[in-house]
Length: 320
Image 1 (tube, rainbow, N blue to C red):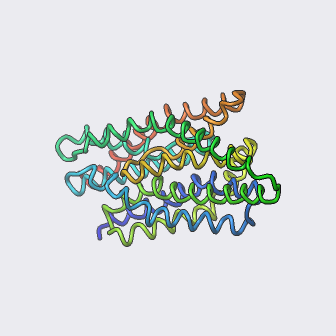
Image 2: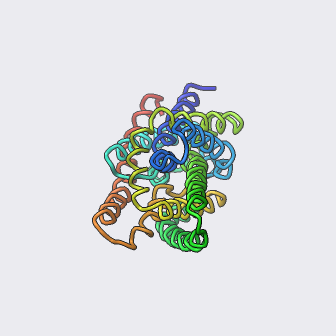
Image 3: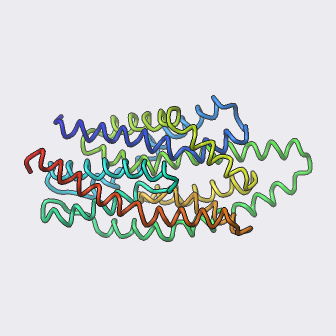
């Protein structure tokens, strides 16, 4: 195993940790803010769901990077390492700045640019690339529709229940289910694309369990502040609206994950949230739309520039 392979594998581990901690905010946040479970159990169930999402659900995304981009092995490893390193730094910076961003929207455009400037040394499955890119535009709208349908279905179910104690149990079950499903889908898609990159250095049976563990540890060590903020924003919508928004977005995300398409988890969940927020269009909705638009416009450009810089530096160090 070369130093380049070791570096790529370690960057993947760190990326899984960062993404796991950041993207668990919605699932962990709703559990913490509603006290549906005790805090320690909230972290435990989110971590287990994340681990299973990566190690099992993420297998459908094996070909999202490994196999989608091909070519000279050294150039391939350098390109993926550059893009992964630059993207996760950009992802971390933007999300800490309050701009919701998607790792897939950073990785795919950056890889495409590196393929174009690498002449015949690298090739890309352009049909898969363009289908993935197009999914970023229509998947949020599908999430909006899914969340609204799920919301009205739940209203019918809960309205039939007259006993307040039993109704609260139904709400608790919905909250826990939506949190578990969200963690699983996040691991499968958001971390699954990172695991696909890790396959360039290690086999499946090593990459997926270890990257899943790293993502789970990210929940314990780097998600507290984000989960509290996001959790209370969600519950302000009401329990039915919040769970419908999460599950509605998750359903669309999981469908695309099973198809092997790395879409934006952030945008499908935000699509579900916005779909139900439109019922009372106000300052919060306008602010959310502004933030999502910033992420769409900013994250790919920032990642491309950073990837080009990293690619040039690494090539110089290796004498390529």
